[in-house]
Every structure is written in structure tokens, then in C-alpha cells.
Image (cartoon, rainbow, N blue to C red; front, side, top):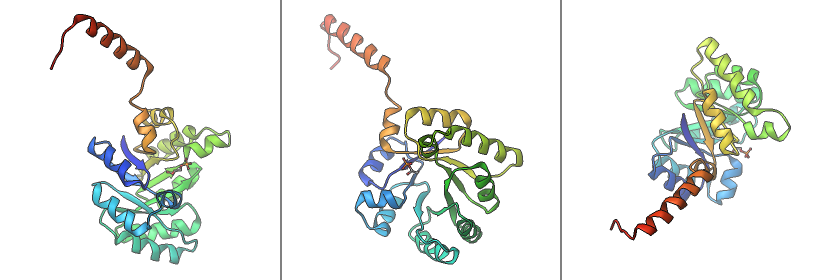
Length: 217
Ligand code: G3P
């Protein structure tokens, strides 16, 4: 499974990128706001840091305006994936932008039928939002599994990009189902390294080591 980092904070991206944990980056207007940076500047900086796709989101509501914004964002760098919302206008923009050779990430997906439409419109990535479905007492993982099944049934090449990942369990479940990509906040990716038995085992080993009176260096 590819790991995208869901942030516009360049320091956090750099730390994970140095460890080989970054296959791409996703941003959205809320993450741009949080960064306090200009969208064009920060997207260019991020795109220069990582080899993989960097999603930058349009904010227009009409298809023609989305296409114009998408073309401008795509010019920032070769590895930009233009992010459009899963609306009828967004699907029109997806079709045009993908036909022009751009990567397109269709975001705010909350149903398998939406994902089916995005694939038919030529989306490179579909972003089902797991955490936000959980927020309204639905199971976001069921959606990932349904999309996986439908895409496999018909051989769609659109990649499932599990988004709104809030926990290590979300990451685990998305991998188990066969999501092509997950995008997660840096905190969640780091938490994947944690286990209480690792901490307990390490403490026991170090206590015994101290009793040997030895040193390695
Ligand atoms: O990738 C989408 C993500 O940024 C949304 O996450 O936690 O705001 O639902 P969240």
C-alpha cells in the first residue's frame, strides 16, 4: 500500500520522506489554512520535495472554473494531482483534466456509486473519507471494501486512496481490504510504529543489560 501524507506542513513531510515513508502528499483547503502558507508556494515546495503525486484542490463550484483552476495548479509541477470534489461539475472537470493528461484525485467520496462514476470519468485516485463516515455512525471500511469489489469486478484502474484516516486501526483495515493508497496525518503514520509490548520488552531487555555491566561502545 502506498502512503500519502495528509498535510501541508513541510517539516512533517520532510521527516517522513527521509525514512522512505512518503509515496505522495495530499492537501485540501483546510490543510492550506492550517499551514498559513500561500497555496501556490507551499504546493510548489512540497512537489519539489517528494517524487510521488501531490494533490492540490480546486475551490470553484462550476466545471469550467474548476478546469481553469486545475490547469493552473497542474502547471506548478509534473507531479501535481488536481483534486476535484465528487459533484457532477467535479466529474465533468475530472473528465476534461484527465483527458489532458493530468492526474486527478476525486475527493469527498461517500458512496460506492460515486466512486463508480469517478472511475468512469477517468479519475486517477478516488478518495473515500473513512473517518467522516464513522462520525455519522456508518462504517467507512465497508465503503472501501465495496469500492475495491466494484473496481476489481470491472478492471477499473482508478486507485482507491483511503482518506480521512484517523487511527492506526483505519490504516490496518484499509491495508487488509486492499486499498491502493492511504493518506494519513503524520501523527497516525508514526503511531503505527507503537506497541505497548514493544515498550515493555525493551524496558526488560535494558534492565537485564544494565545488570551485565557491559557496554557496546
Ligand atoms: O484526506 C482528507 C482528510 O484531510 C480529511 O480528514 O480528518 O478532516 O476528515 P478529516
